[in-house]
Length: 319
Image 1 (tube, rainbow, N blue to C red):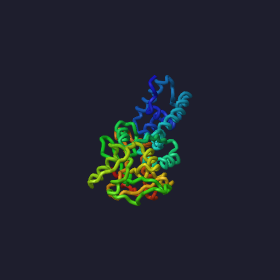
Image 2: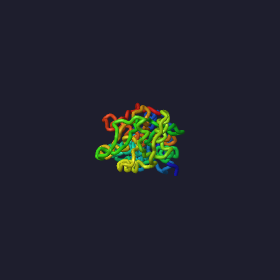
Image 3: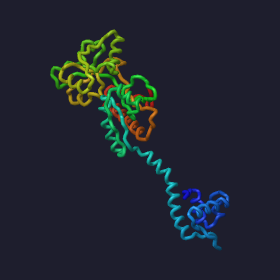
Image 4: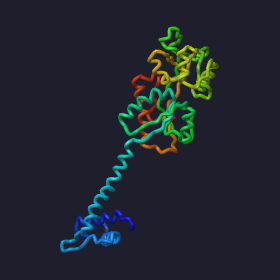
C-alpha cells in the first residue's frame, strides 16, 4: 500500500474538526475539489469509508475516528520535530578527539575537563599527547578533531585560532635543591654556556631557539637530546643540565619547588599557542563547545596570573 501522505492527513483532520469540506478548504487556503481528492485518496488507500455527509454537515465513521486520533498525534509529532532536532543539535554530546602539546595540555586540559563534566555531561574528550609536528600531521590526516599546539606555519585545510603568546623559560633545579644555580632572568648570551637538555631537531622550540641565537651570532650548548618532556624534567631535577620549556610544562613542579622557571630576556623567545582544526571536517556542536572551553580556560588562567608571562591573543584572532 502506498504510504499515507501528510498533506492528505492534514486535509482529513481539518474536515473532521470543521465538519465541512468548504470550511476546511478556506482554512487551508486550497480549493475544495483538492480537499475532496485528498479524502478520496485516503479512502482508496485504506479501502475504508472515512466520512459521510449528513444534514449536520460531515460526520466521521468509526474507522475515520481511529484515523483522526492517530493523524492528530502524527501531525503533532511532525510539528514538534524541528524544535526537537534543534534542541538535540544544540546539546553538545559525543566524543571529540584532541591532540595536545604536552606543556599547554598539562595546564589547560585538567580544568577544561572539570568544567566540561560540570556543564556538558554528555560530552567527552579523548586526549592524545604529542609534539607539534605529530599534531599537525594528525590534523591534516583527519585523525584529530582539534589540536592544541604551537604555531609553526600555515597548513592547507587547517584553520588556526590564536589563544595566547607563551614565553619560553630556562628550567633548572628548584629551591629545594641547595646547590641549584639559577638566575632570575636569562639573556641570550647567558644561554651559551648552559648545559642544555633539548629535543632533537626538527622540534619546533629547538629550531626556534637555535634560529634566535643565530640571529645574535650565538649558539646553544646542547649536552643531551631528549624527545620527552617528563625525562627532560627528571634529568634537570637530578642536576644533569637545564631545559628550555614553556611554563605550562613545569607549573606543578615549580609550585612544589623541585624545578625553577626563569624567563629569557628576548621579545622573540615566545611561542604562539593555537587551537586548530581541519576545515574538511564538519564543525559540530561538540567541536565548537570544546574549542570554546579551551578558549575560556586559557583566558581564565592568564587573567588570574596562573600562566606567568602569557598574554592573550585577541578573540577570534588567527595566525
